[in-house]
Amino acid sequence: MKIKELLLISLIGLFQENCSTPQIIKTVERPIINSSKETKEIIKFKGESLEKKVSREEAKDTACNEAKNNVAKNISNKIIETYQENIEYTNGETKQEIKRELISMTNTELINTKIEKITCEEKEEKYSCVCIVSMIKEEYENLIQQQKKRKNLEFSSVRIEFENKVEYIDKTEVTEGEFTVYLRLKGIKEYKIKCKNGKETITYKLNPFNEKDIQSKKPMMCIDQKTALDYCKTFQKDLPTKEEWEVAAGTREFPFGNEEPTFENSKVNFGYKNTKERETEDVGTNSEDISTYNLQDMGGNVAEWTKEKTKDNKYFVKGGAWNLTLKYMRTKNSSKAINPSTSIGFRCISRE
Image (cartoon, rainbow, N blue to C red; front, side, top):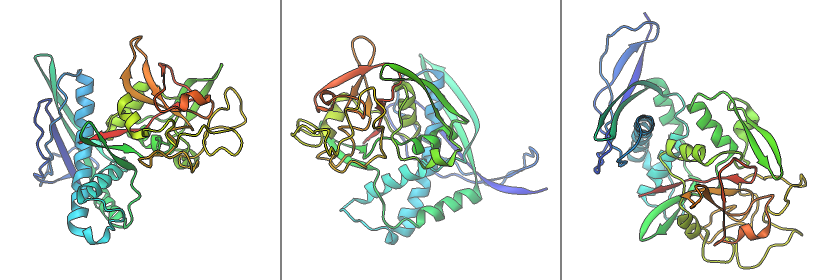
């Protein structure tokens, strides 16, 4: 009987005030072909969520996302502790920031974890869940070796200060390629949605197994706020609030400066409303659309969902887009929306 070692990671997702550090317990061997109960050692990680009042489904998702995040933490800890000499601190980053970036990168590559078991309890309208995920040991070790080879880290997030707290916001908008990772994690074979494109309605498609879509650096669009939020939550992040977005954009009239851009030779992708003359571009293409925090495309390309609701139960949207006029690009201006659009994408934020 052929047997491969599995690393089993379990999380106790208790929705309480305190949060414990994940701990390695043991490992297990499991047969690939049948369901023999023969086991050896098991590896477990215990973590707790800070969320207090959620539905059962949200509790399940949070617990399993946390379990996967604990795998990423474990891998990143091994790299930091054992191979720290391979990592170059190019811009004065702290060890903690290097670790955060490694966890973030590893999380997006954990597509081979499997949910083994979920159990939940309800108490006083609060749910607590236990989620066990597994990963083949060979794949686990290969991922460690792969991450070891990273010498120069291209940081995907930027450190900002908001209300005397340190936060990290994505440097660019989430790309179509990055979104395909989320689709594979969720077991979605095709993303297909009706989407507003100016006055028209189009059908937007994304195939998580198509190489062109996997490699796409164009910003994700045609996505509703709920799905954007779930993407961020899946990778232990969140959508920014309207105020957090504005802090990250800076204090200038526009995220990229005080001068109004023009259509001629513009380095900001905006203003081609209801036309096909120009579309979204790869994130970071527009070299002058950079905020004081060095965030890219906050003025144009696509506008961005925030976490905040408006009084009429829509969501605040910040920033300009390839098919929106200049007024949307002003740092303090906001629009509101509820439906997916070719004008709206998103970026994520993580908080200390």
